[in-house]
Image 1: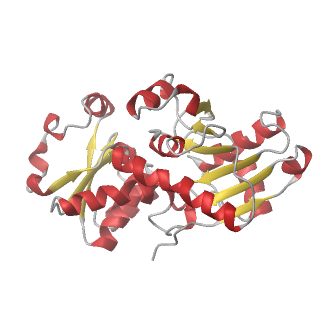
Image 2: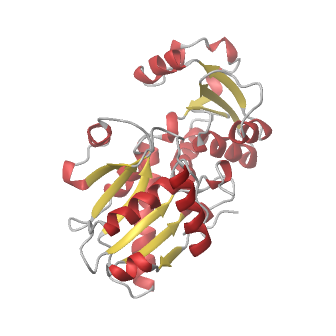
Image 3: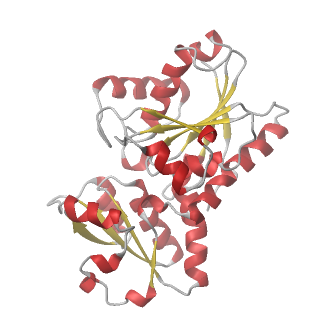
Length: 301
């Protein structure tokens, strides 16, 4: 059911040739069609922990377009685990594709207005702070934080680097210099940075507005400041987009046959190729771009 390790796909185009860059895409989007990418990696050890605690319900949190919400719902469907999603924002009369998919997988959806959701986030998602009259079986609930971001997620995401190192050895390629990934909560890029050698650099591409994301990530996950760079590519905010971004995604998909979404991976690759064009990476660098999945929920036709 799950394709692990996920493929490591070489990319060659006018940018990589011009700047003498060796680029590979870690295709975590191919891990599973519905529980793909970093979402599975962050859920993997959380689900194992829930099983150890004999919990039969996963409760988690996210926005209306959250890939984490849909992945948790799908994982619950396939593994026979109940799922509950606390959704930021007002309830929609017509569900968007992400929430509709989650509901079809059997996830119970509950909505909190943005003020209440912000308070919940500030209180580290303690569900006692909201009206838990919803949940008749609270003793059976295992809480997964927003985006799956906790120490179990870090463990799962660290395995990305282990797989890449093994795959590069099998290809008789030198070790990589840079690894870049889209980030929201920052757990994926923190797990990656946690596994790097001193000569390697992790770059997180923030897809939402967050003035102190690097500080938050380094403090929360006990990283050294030099382990990680955070660059912005949010196009106005989370799930915001522009015609320029859509045009880039369509061109990239046509050239490389790799699907992207406008929420995470489209913004990642847009930023990556701008960095290459700006000479950010030294000539001869080997770069890994982590495709974190999510394209099921935000396709660009």
